Structure formats: structure tokens, C-alpha cells
Image: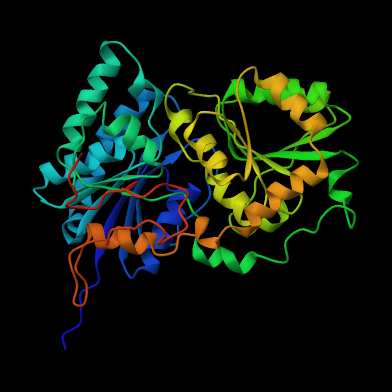
Length: 419
């Protein structure tokens, strides 16, 4: 029998050094794909990281500097032209965010590639949900791009339900790819943290430890945590680990110097450091107040899957997509404004028994709630040409088939019709 050709994915990314880029590239490699990554370097972190897979640097960009990004994208077309041979060999152009989708579509048109294009949405940028002439123009551009893709990939069903369906009127195929951990993360699981009374030294004498891990973003979110730390100085330790993004660095470090129960313990590696992180945490902070009318309301945070696998309950915003998930599964607590009074009162009055009952429900959930299972395999079947023994289509996910926190019908595969 003739050898089956290896499927080839050209992966367009906003940051070659980003952990999400590494995760997606390695997931595709694990599915037997040849992966060629084309992306930018960001002026923020991991500047010295050299990706282990074939890659092309398209230029350098910075957070929030939109005109600089436009110039960098224009210059990137010359780099893509020099790499058009690799693009022609690809079965699919896979773009992670709108900037990269524009580049993928531009390369496809300029070089007459005629490739299938998949568009993965990392976040709905706040400007896309605003009023005014410029946001309307950007939505029109994205709507035109959507008309040319083969598949929309979202990490939360609310991105489609609240934005791509009603606002962008997208009726094409879409795929729900949650930010779950790779299956290999299960090897990191040790015995769940015992109940109180054995070794509580990691609490450093505080009653509770609340942790914010990952991209530390949103000045309003950080300011709320600071006010809580001021009110609960003898009761709660607030820990940060990760990377500062949209929080003012000077105010961040000033608060750390002023409040002994507010600590920052540096960056961390996923999945290596997860047992250490979540083995010394009572609650994971998942209240995102950065863009409360759009992206923050719709997203599902990565830390839910990380914390959930290790049995750490979440604190979330009531009425947001993630808050609805927490309430549906009854594995955490949600809060409505005024947040400061609500959260402070909760942390001051919650009993150990009440906490443990929620933690045990979280630990009882199937691991497939937090691990990717065959999600990447389904994605590959949706975007790649059929190979012998496959249909080239992702099968429909039925209610109860996986331990997803979403009701049946949350994701549509290629060929499904819009309601």
C-alpha cells in the first residue's frame, strides 16, 4: 500500500514564544501533522526562546501599538513571499487571531494558493464590540474575512452565541476547542491535597490562599484585589504568578511592597509547575473585569481547566459565561457587584466544611472535563483532507459523550447549518 502523505499545516501566530503557540504546534505534531509556524516576536517576554519546530519570524510587534502592528504585517508579506514554497505545500493555513487571518488570506490571494483557511479566535478584541465608525469598519473587515474561511475555531461557545452569530452574522461551520490541558498532564496528578489538619504550612498562617495565575491583566481587576488585600490583611494571602500585561507595573510593585499578604512569585512553566501552584492554593481568581461588556463576559479562562484538574475551586463573576459554568457544575462561587463587599464577606464567613464540600464535587468530576481528549483529533478531521480510513469530518459531539460543561449543541462541525 502506498504511503499516506503527511498532512501539512501552516500555522500563523501572533507570538512565536507564546505558550499557546507552543501548545497548539505540539498538539498538531502529536496528530501526525507536519507543522510550519509563521509568526511575530513580541517585545514582552520569552524573547530568547527558540521554537523547536520549523518556523519563520515575520517581524516584531508590541501590545496595543496598532499602527506599528499594521506596518509590521505589511512588511511580513515580503517574508511570506520568500517562503511561498512552504505555503504551497500546506494543506491548510491555520490563523490564530484576526491579524494572522489577514496575513493568511493575503498570502492565499497574492500567491494563488487556494488553500483551506481556519480562523482560531483567542479573544474578541474590545474595539470589535464598541460603537463608532472605526469599530464598525473593523467588524466589516472581519466579516469579509469570515466569508472566506473554511472553519471558525472558538474556545468558548459564548464567542459564537454572543458575537459571531448575532453581530457578525457568521453562519458557516465552527468548532469548539476549549482551553483544556493536554492529556499528558494527567501524569502530573498526585494524590489530591489532603483536608486541613495535616500540613498547612503553605498558607503561611493565613486562613485562605487566593491565587491569580497566568496573564495578569486588567487594572480594575488588580485594584479590586488590592482593596481586598487591605481589608483582609490577617485573613487572606493573595498570590500572583505569571506575566504582567495590562496592569501598571509601578502600581503593581508598590502594592506588593505595601501589603505583606500580597505576593508575586514569578513566572511558571505549564504543565511542569502546575502541581506546585495548585497544591498551595485554596481558590483560583477568575474574575476578569477588563472588558466586562464583551470579551471578559464571554471567555472561559485557561485557569479553570488547570485548577479544576487539581481540585481548586474558582471565584467567578455571576452572569458571565464562566460564572454560569461554575454555577451549573456547583464547583466554585460567583459574585455580583459590589464585588469588594461580596468577596470580603464570603472569605470572612466561609466555613472549612463548606469549602471542602465544593472541593470534593470538583474532584469528583470526570478528568475529561479538564483534559483535551480527542478534541485536537476532531479539529484535524475538520480542517484536513480525508485520509484512508477517515471521513475528513469531525464527528458530532453528543450530549453525555464527553464531560463538557456545556449543553448539547454547543458546537457545530463543518456541514452543520446555522439556526
